[in-house]
Length: 393
Ligand code: FES
Ligand SMILES: [Fe+2]
Image (cartoon, rainbow, N blue to C red; front, side):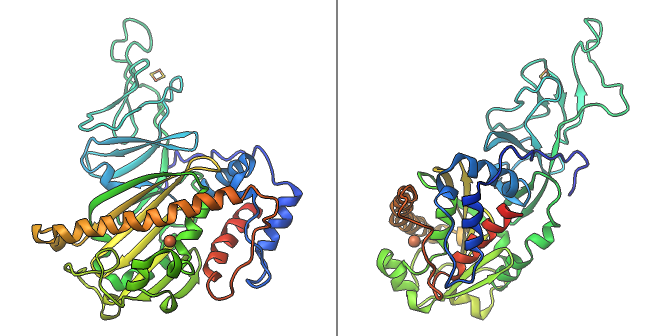
């Protein structure tokens, strides 16, 4: 949807320095000659601010999940940098996203997640809004005799709705309201997910939360890097050996696929598969990065969704959400489900110290963005190019 209240919050406050422009142009070279993103892309406040202005607000950005607000009347505030965003489940079951700001004097409306909200009432002067953002009443607005303060203007103030859409369970927002249609944004993702049948209808069974001392881009780069599997992830290597991976880059996604050599709890297992699963997908692990901040893994009987929320240049919040087919929720699969979550904990523990090390290394003047392997790092390079293109636009 495109709310007519969509507003731009992107007022460029700063710009890239010449050294950054030169470095970003080098990222755009062909893979053997390119350099990775410069150190400033991972460490500098100014670069991070620009990223927010030129990238996050202009594209579709995953802000949360519909399962976070499952019932009508559920509300959840989310920090998006220094912007407060409000997720609301309406009486019509629709998810709407608003700027979490009262149009009276700018108070933050909702500070904690809550359920069964009949209305959204501002804690400051009690202006009250319905779950579509419409102003209902503003007590004593015209003075003590105006108890209800019913809006009388042709165009009364309302909550500012943000353009939003949902893929599976993921809520995506486009803050400036000008990104291409959502269907276009998810076109390649839809194609990659299609062989897994009803994967988008999976049930959210578990979540794991992390705070990671690393820039969000290092987490994406590490996620799509299959080159390290052999040395870092022994269990994953046994299930999907590094040498068997193939990679694809298309539009706003980076994809890796590997045949599952050995069923393991975390990486493709023994639970009921997705309805509509294709023969080929039944034996294939697929992982992909949807630019910018949503990472997905599909296998025959599960989907995991890694949601990254940048929190400054050197810190990220990551939530891993697990989805399974309805039939996998039966009690007899509890052990398998638990093993799946535990295997991802192990996998992530094997990775987090690496990305935190990489973050530290980005402070060294001896590092110049690094080189890309023409075979393994092609998809990492594709991701870096998307960042460079957004910043240079
Ligand atoms: S600031 Fe919200 S009612 Fe006054
Ligand atoms: Fe890894």
